[in-house]
Image 1 (tube, rainbow, N blue to C red):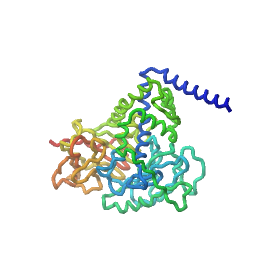
Image 2 (cartoon, rainbow, N blue to C red):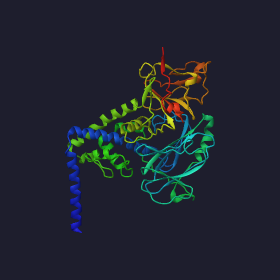
Image 3 (tube, rainbow, N blue to C red):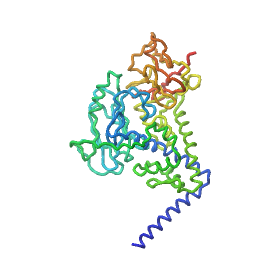
Image 4 (cartoon, rainbow, N blue to C red):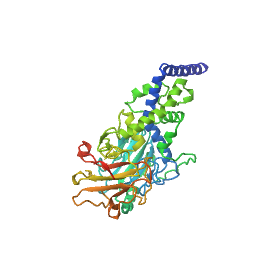
Length: 464
């Protein structure tokens, strides 16, 4: 036994020495590059971890917050106090489900949706959408399926379809079409009929356990939390999350680079134990990487008429880690383009950033109104990518509102802080009380002309 313990200790020493040697064999510049790239690669995983920590920090479901493996439902549209998810929408009611299938599958049931549009995109911890039950994909009939872990082996009950999650933990951010406040009660009945139970309790009476509340949990918006993280916290959390949430099969190149600075999947990492040049590189990584991530978000996609429309590298990303991180920062939980396209406006027709001190108009000719099979909306965000308080509590406007068309069938939307006048208020989207803002069009189940790029939104023009 003594010899065995000695051999084990020697092996561990040799392994650590090899890791240190690898990290010491690179230049300071290369260490900085690897550290920056590792931060970009890690960002969505850490964002998922923080988002789930915030969302599950309740004893029982409250709004979209709920303990693991339990549904949380938004019962009303979000308002300016909602901070859990950046760039939320106000034209569907959310249903969220943070799942943990590291031990056993989770059986999910969705009721018949009638003629109502809905989608249930499940994301792994790297923010990749791996399945989207809903109107476009599976239809609106009732269905039951299982989310199973990456290494699970077993048998599911008859009639239960399997969806294998690439990671042991993940998140659903579902959307159900809601046609204004008068539609709340009908949507709530649909939500209440959604069920999620662990495999061992399927078909049996089941009372979900209460969640554990951490009174010290930071409940601020996840992007803000990550912005404030030092390198030791960020990379330590990244290493911890990789234990139950393995990298994707096509990630080996970046994993090999990470290993050169001492970070490996399944192993703990402490910045203080790394060589000084690696510590210096990792400490410098957040500032450098966050600039790239935020730039990637603001510049993603193709720009036309002042709008940026991303028709690739959204929802699923392959090895496009920078764009994946950019979407995690600015649009965490984004759908694949076949389900929704999100043209984003950061500046007016003259290329100047939007300011709440100015007035704007968005005009659509009759044959240029957004072409969708589902529905469309235009949503306002403040400089924190959240809803902004306004006098009529309107955060989005779209085709299910009582919009007034011009005599020729065209449409004008008025974007400004003060009312454009009683005769135009039906078409008014208020801006924040002060500061800058951005906007998203949401095109649910877009038609082919959106997906092939032949349709683009009109420019947002400043009114002098």
